[in-house]
Length: 86
Image (tube, rainbow, N blue to C red; front, top):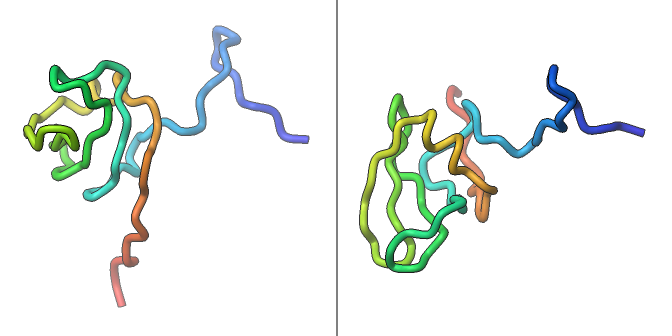
């Protein structure tokens, strides 16, 4: 039986953190709503900043990766991405 890993402080570590595997076209839910009321965003850019487009009003914002990782709640949709290479 596998158990959820724990950090040094004994708090369970979430397995659905975006980390380095966030990709363009992923749809994510953030913890705080946009002023239009939507919690859901489409990833439009990945780098030091994460570019997001609100699914409620189509507004585009850039969040530093560290702030995105704090606000990230879960994935809503993860399209299949073709493998790079041959």
